[in-house]
Image (cartoon, rainbow, N blue to C red):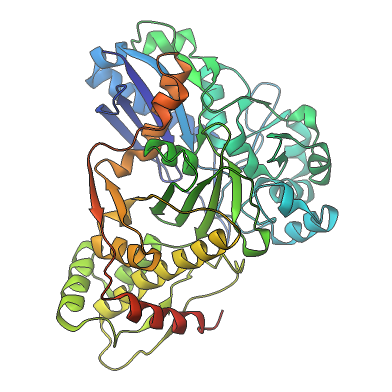
Length: 484
C-alpha cells in the first residue's frame, strides 16, 4: 500500500493525514498553534512555530504508525494564505509573520492603489490589509531592518516546505495573495513588485501546484522512518487545496467553507476579477482554472461569540435553535448582519460592525443564535450575487468546515442558493486530502485528472427548503437595509 502525506498548515494548528490513492485516511495527527495579538487589529505568528508543529506531528505519526510512515511516497502542503514570511541568506525569518486577518496596513492599501490603480483587475483583488504587499510597505515604514536583512519573500506553507526540502519555491494559487502576481499569466509582475518596494530577484521560483518542488531532506526521511526518497509537491493555498480535496475542478463547482471565517469558492475557466465587490480571483490548483472567492469575515466565529455572550456551549445552543425553529418558525426572529470582524465581500468595509433589528423582550439566546446563522447565510448569498453577477458560473455545491455539521445552517444556504449541497463524510480533512492528492501526482502515481477530479464517495445531501424560500427572501431584504 502506497500512502501520501497531506499537510494542512492552518492558523490554529497543523494537521497531517496519511491517505491512500482512494482518499482513505489511515492515520492523522494534529498540533495546535497560538496566534499572537500584541495590539488591537494585529495578528501574527512566528514561522518557527509552524515548523515545530509540523515536526511534532510527523514524529507522533512515526511513533504510533511506523509501518504506515514507511510507505509514504509523496508529501503535499495546504497552507493559510497571505502571510508575509521574510527569510535571510541563512533561511532564517527576519520578522514574525503578519497573518491574513491582520489589519495594521490599512493606510498602505490606499498607497498601493494610488501607485497601481488597475491592481484589482490584474491581481487577486483590491488591496486589503490581509494581502502581503501592503504588509511589505508597512514593514518598510515601521521595521525597515527586517526588510534589509531579508533575501526572499515566502508564504507560510512555502516556509514549511523550505524546512522540509531546503528549496525556495511557491505556486500561483498562493502567490496570487501577495498582489505581486499577474493572475492571467501566472507569473510575478515587475510593476507590482516595484509598487510594493520589492524586487523580482527576491521572490521564489513558481511551479504548478501538482509539480515537485523539492525532495524531503535525507535526515528527515531517516528520522521519520520513510523507506524511499520522497518528492514534495508545491501544494496550494488552503481554499484551493480544500476545493481539490472534494474534487472541485470544473467550472461551476463550488465549495462553501463554514469555518472561523466563511468563503464561497467557485471554479471558473476565465479570469473574472470583481475588485469593486471585494471578490478575490486566484489561479486554482487545477491547471487552466481560477477560483473566484467571496469572503465572509466571521462565520462560526460569530456563533462562538453569541455562545460566549450567553454562556451556552455551541452544541447546546445549536440544539436550542433547532427546537425553536421547529416549534415557532422564523418569521418573528431578529434579523442580523453578524459582521463582528468587518465586511469583505461585497462592501469591503473592514471597519464595519454588526447590526441587528427586531429585538424584543422575548428575544433569547436561541433567537440570537438563529439570527447569527441566518445572517452568515445571507452574507454567503451576497457573495454569490457578486460572483455570478460578474459571469462566474454556479453548478455543484459542496460544504465543508466545522459549521457544515449543522444541517439547519447548511439548509439556509442551500435554500438561498436554490441548490442541493453535498456534505462529504471527511469534510474537516478536505484541505489535507487536497494536499495528499497533489502529492500523489508529484510522485508520478496519478495523472492530474485522476487525482484531482474525484468527488467524495461518502456524502450527505442537504436539499433546499422551498417552503422557507419566500420568507427568507423577505428577511434578506430587511438584512440588506441594516446599517453598514
